[in-house]
Amino acid sequence: MSEWFPSASPESLAARAELLRVLRRFFVDRGVLEVDTPLLSQGTIPDAGIDAFRLPGEADEPDRYLQTSPESAMKRLLAAGAGDIFQICKAFRQGEAGRHHNPEFTLLEWYRVGSDHAALMREVAELLGIVLKSDGWQIWPYRALFIELLGVDPLDEQTSLTGLTDLAQSRIGVLPESLDRDAVLDLLMSHCIEPEISDWGMVFVTDFPLSQAAMARCIPMGDVDVAARFECYLNGKELANGYWEQIDPDALAAQLHAENTRRQQRGLPLRPIDGRLLAAHRHGLPECAGVALGVDRLLALKLGVEGVAETISFGWDRA
Amino acid sequence: MIAFLLSGSSTMPNFSTNEFKPGLKVMLDGDPCSILENEFVKPGKGQAFNRVKLRNLKSGRVWERTFKSGDTLEGADVMDVDLEYSYTDGEFWHFMDPSTYEQFGADRDAVGEAEKWLKEQERYEITLYNGTPLAVIPPNFIELEITETDPGLKGDTAQGGSKPATLSTGAVVRVPLFITEGEVIRVDTRTGEYVSRASKS
Image (cartoon, rainbow over all chains, first blue to last red; front, side, top):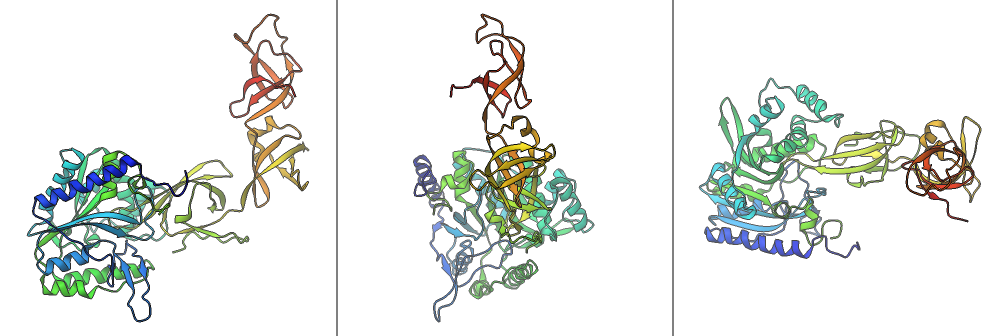
């Protein structure tokens, strides 16, 4: 097929338009305000697993980054008193090209003031139930999922990196060299757990290791502290990532610096810490929970197509 | 970051995981491999990996390997060329580039299963690795003379039984009963099955 031709069929484009209408109606009906924040910002996030596109500034202009998600800007709105808000926008992540990834993709992100991650999971399940006409969902703590499917406790200090690496090696084969603990856990998740839960329907994985907290707050869970974060999986495909948001500015600053440290360890360029986000937190972020959901993947699931390119007018190779 | 860079004497370029397209030839564990599939995986907010399936061009085995996204492999000096079969001296099977007359000797490992389909002046696809034949792929269809088979029975038609026939290359295929010694037949080299009598040339 020629390069100028769309990667999505006319039916798929129509389904996209309909999906966007359904999503907007869902939030408007619930009194959630639609917002629109800048795609190009002076700040970005230091998340070690995410690589932002950087646009060098001309002359005296500062560098700008294409947003990897609208999180920072939406939190600044929350701190300014916006209340419940949602946004459907483009987000950009360098290098993330594959069957289930497009470096430019569509995100639905929303925040609920006064909610925690448990309440937000219910709302995600309701929304997905409407879109996919499905019902039923289950919650699995990260720890329980690893114990159930792999027989290993990822949060137990007795579980060594060597032990995890040996397990991954026996399941997956030859591994890349010098993986840190989280990288090995990520491999076990993507190679061993995701295929196992592919016929479990809608699964919320919660209570992540603190090292994978990103901007979630830390909560006690039995004998250990965990991140109040969830990932929503549908048919074994990750669809949404949510937090009971960290609102303590000092804790957030520490988490962001920890991400930069991780970047350094992995040999990645450091990212500036977004001072405006921290200032908004110091002013006061209300108690809230927020979630980002991949719209292209949701559409791919709804249409039953294999790759996200079939849901996007012009996928990465043709854009 | 470049954990998989293998040092080699050649000056092949390195390829990053995002350049791993099907058909790309790379070096892995010292063997030339052809990329079959490359899947980008990235759990949650975690680290990105590429799950790659490769065919080891020496052993023919399919390997599955996981790389960190951004890791690189050295390109393999592998190319496919069309060469004409000349002769064998028992140790090597000699092929010739019909435009340059350059000769290439393939050993038994490289010739493998293709040996029974080798006919002089016929063209074969040869995979060259550092200039040496690594694999020989016969054309899908080849016309060969029958050197030995039981006499055909008069009155037999296309339907019905079959019998073994030895071809000029030594290959044995099953042919319909009406086919006789000295005839030239068309054979599918992928299945080793008789297709038809050869078209009159």
